[in-house]
Image (cartoon, rainbow, N blue to C red):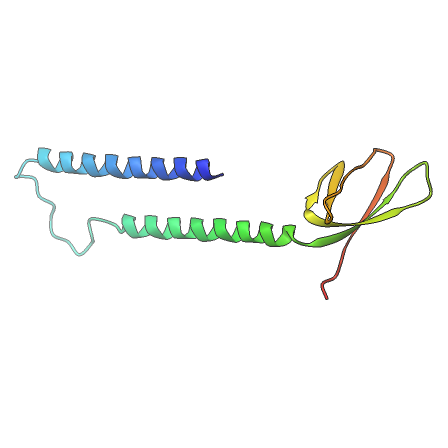
Length: 128
């Protein structure tokens, strides 16, 4: 995850310096006879402000999603495992982040693997 962020920042930095260099080079190549007529319209739209707003929104959105996944993963669940051949069921407490398709890790650290024929009943434990 961190490598993706670093690569993205490297690409943004490279694009920034490329455009800055290209703008300086283009400004030096222009002839002095070419002029932009004076108008009420701003010839340079606020692209920098737009870019800053978009980056800010992306960071806030990413932090919100990461925070939600962290908070949601800490939800405590009750898992009732009933084997198909036996009639006796067992209850476990599991964090939501530790519940997978065919196995789960209990709060105590015990790893439980579930067979295809076993039945699971998962309920959320109310906070209180």
